[in-house]
Image (tube, rainbow, N blue to C red):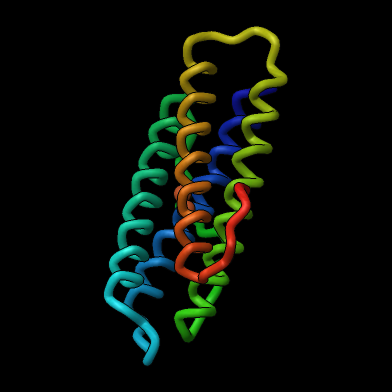
Amino acid sequence: MTKEKIIELLNHGLELEHAAFVQYMSHAEIVDGTTTEPVIARLKEIANDEKGHQEKFRTLIGALGGIPSIDFAPRHPATNIKQILEVNLKDEKTAVDTYRKILETLKKEKTKGYYDHLLEHEIRHILMEEQEHITELELLLGIQGKSY
Ligand SMILES: [Fe+2]
Ligand SMILES: [Fe+2]
């Protein structure tokens, strides 16, 4: 796989993270009758994780000589707490699917150097955190979560 292809995949991830961050931060300010402080706090904490993921993607892209994207994946509006939790849950699942695909693509590479192992490790770590976000959103929604 060419370096350009890897950079493209990582930039796609970065755009998902840009979208996730602004979406969580915006949603954390939408207060309706059923919104509770712990939910708002949790949304902000998750947003902070997404910010960390952005930084990781940027570093990985830069290390490959690529230019980190300044674009955003589509955002999804919501107006009440149930909708907020639902749209973000869906987006977290998209992120997990996307990062799984990136990992599968990386795994197909036969010869691997130090950087390739580091890359896989970092993506796996981000993927794990998205799975934790799914569990938390499902708990807030009162869904019996099965591991995604
Ligand atoms: Fe993320
Ligand atoms: Fe997430």
